[in-house]
Length: 301
Ligand SMILES: NC(=O)C1=CN([C@@H]2O[C@H](COP(=O)(O)OP(=O)(O)OC[C@H]3O[C@@H](n4cnc5c(N)ncnc54)[C@H](OP(=O)(O)O)[C@@H]3O)[C@@H](O)[C@H]2O)C=CC1
Ligand SMILES: Cc1cn([C@H]2C[C@H](O)[C@@H](COP(=O)(O)OP(=O)(O)O[C@H]3O[C@@H](C)C(=O)[C@@H](O)[C@H]3O)O2)c(=O)[nH]c1=O
Ligand SMILES: [Mg+2]
Image 1 (cartoon, rainbow, N blue to C red):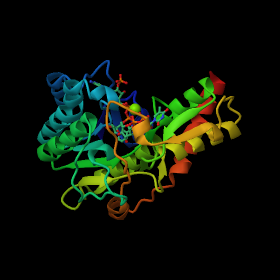
Image 2: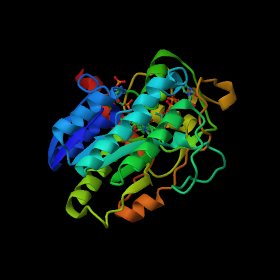
Image 3: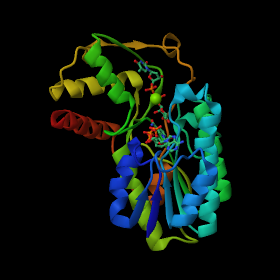
Image 4: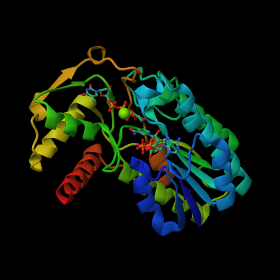
């Protein structure tokens, strides 16, 4: 099996390079050898490698920056998945792609299902939703995993931001009225490998292609997540100026950002768990694992 992996230096791409390695020959590309905003170059790359599977974690993920950089966000998040889909369809290849809780408007308290209509509130969310549609239309053999609040040891994320701020300051202010589930890149990569393997064995008519909500189980707010991270980091002996007790809860209105974020980022993962018979561990497990890796990296450095 030949697998083309984009975004190899991102949080998820880094973990996918590890998790996909035992399944076949993996061509892992990053920004340096594959600019996703260059549709012609992307098309040429897929044609020359002719993969059986394309795994596409590359994305424009700077949520606030996207508000003032709409064209790039759409080129990477909307157009590129369409191009990958078109080329995959010609090859009969599978495309695995990732999307976000930010496609929803975040109203209500109930977890969103795949049947709920997206209504993104920011440019990033609109570009990711456009990418879902472009891929699905171009290539019926797709798996789109909509996930939330991704964190990994490689790359940037909220947990790392909290560790950095807590090392610099004695107090942090974090919003407590946006809820979701932090999901580790390692978990998403391992789940992806299971799906790719299952597809290689029994792909075809019976395979449950489509869009799935995939996140760690449980839920939290950014505020409680920040407190959890600082508590675990302190237990592990990290030198921090601010601990969990130094995090102040604030309302979204008191923490202005360029992009509007959904208050409800809960994803109902029932469809995924039943279709593939896989369990989604609690978010705390993934956060603890990533923190251990970050701390180990610190010690090694
Ligand atoms: N991060 C999160 O919280 C969430 C992410 N997702 C989705 O999951 C997927 C993986 O996200 P994650 O790993 O966290 O994202 P990262 O931002 O960690 O990684 C994305 C990678 O894509 C690369 N990239 C961006 N633009 C281009 C381009 N024009 N050409 C080539 N490469 C490019 C980035 O490079 P560079 O660093 O140089 O820009 C980076 O290496 C994405 O589809 C994202 O939308 C879904 C929900 C939550
Ligand atoms: C740094 C910081 C953020 N916040 C708030 C802002 C925001 O509402 C929330 C999270 O901030 P961030 O900017 O780190 O997170 P953000 O970049 O919005 O994270 C999102 O990224 C994209 C790619 C996704 O797909 C989403 O699932 C989600 O993970 O916390 C504070 O309240 N205090 C702080 O000190
Ligand atoms: Mg961010």
